[in-house]
Length: 334
Image (cartoon, rainbow, N blue to C red; front, side, top):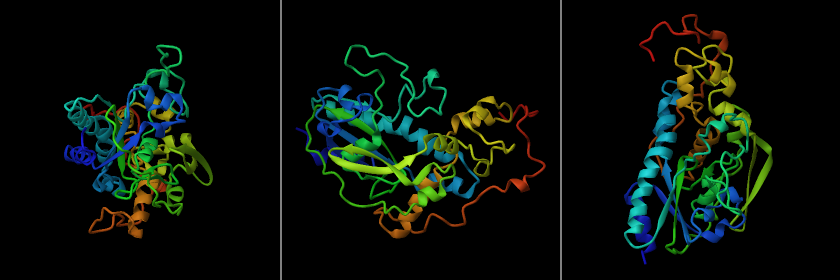
């Protein structure tokens, strides 16, 4: 049997910032298409790893001068590169001790399927078929926030973003399923979110309700969070609000349909590969700033994150020398 704390220590040694353990019965009641027990029916333990998003990844967006850092490194870099690499190391470590380990990174085929082109749909239609009666269709989508809650790593904030006592909203998660039985960590019983509603006030898309809420039951605990307008959230975080998107030189707003239709000056390319250019202004940055000022986070900095008043583009002062969204004459740009 692998010692639990040695396992946690090894996970951190190979690159995880946090590591929690959940027993599989804590997923009882999960929707069939999100239930990890269908991935590995013999699993006894779900190990959840958290990777912090360094505060500096948000600096360029906070200043309004450098937008690719968060989207490339803090989003795709963690989900698609760093997280899977660490998962593999932990999988090999467990399998070297004679137990099977199934990595579950924070990515999915169904999120990238051509049939999922209408990104306004809250619950997309399945683009695959169950291989047998009674089984869910591939690929199952584990709710990483629910898994993190089940593993005792923290709580849901009002915005529905997951909060840990170490980093607040600034982390991403992956999971690992194993037939190694490990004692589960206790469910987090602290209180990080104080319902200050800073997230709702600063959400550029107005996607976070201050009054309406949704509920989940996870491991016998009632979890409450905002009634999120997912369409408004998606449009805003991709740069659909012109006052918060310096790459929208036309001022038309970059909703999904508008982005698809644009050509020239790299806007289509930029938006396709930098989906989160809004930089989670309310749900992550403003939430972090509030928690930092309260002093409740265990990971401390010498200086506060917010240096200046949050910027907002004044469209009435749009410069005349900006290149519009027509075909660029300089073919060396892109």
